[in-house]
Image (cartoon, rainbow, N blue to C red; front, side, top):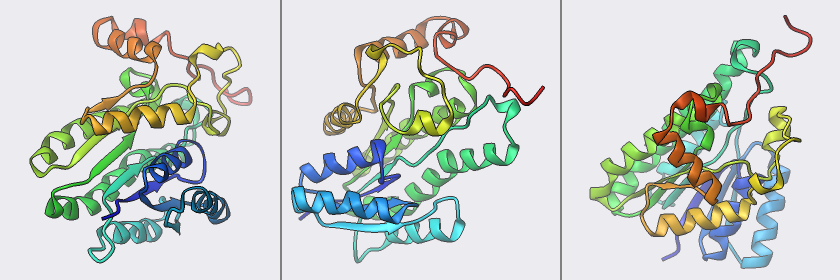
Length: 259
């Protein structure tokens, strides 16, 4: 019996890397993102390389009706989904006080409300079949106070660890994937200036995915790639929070055109 994995934000970056990682393991895929053309390109490449069955499901997850379509696909007993990768997300170009509150609300919805709804739609089927997994993409930003993006990712980590306890009796695995700076489109889209970061801090998407899939197989609760980020996570638990938070790059200043 093949395993079907639904991945949000699958058109690029870590989402596309997860699609490739699961395709290499022989899984069938349901790929979700807003950009249908990019999704089709990813799906075509995976079909050619791996012979993977790829279903393309274009959806803007911030649109309630389109999110409901993805929820219905996850809950469909005739086409069961075995694993969910909650990967879709974005950041904002300025610290919280300087962003329009509507943008902050949209980000919070995509990082918190959408994974909450999609996971809830999938769980009844996983409990009934007594197998499956949920992978939630968090961030090292969620380990300490690093703005509203970090606050949302802290929720993702806590949600994942709590859900893991609740689902363990049903054989359902839950993993919080906690990457650091990864070479994707995320930083550019968020308007982050990362030019001062050394090459050593950067991770490749494939490295993050490979570590996550190994940790999922080992039934670990959290997956952190790279020794330096694992050291950072250790420091976050044991050193003063303000001290460690100050070592993370963050957007500190107001935009130039605002007071």
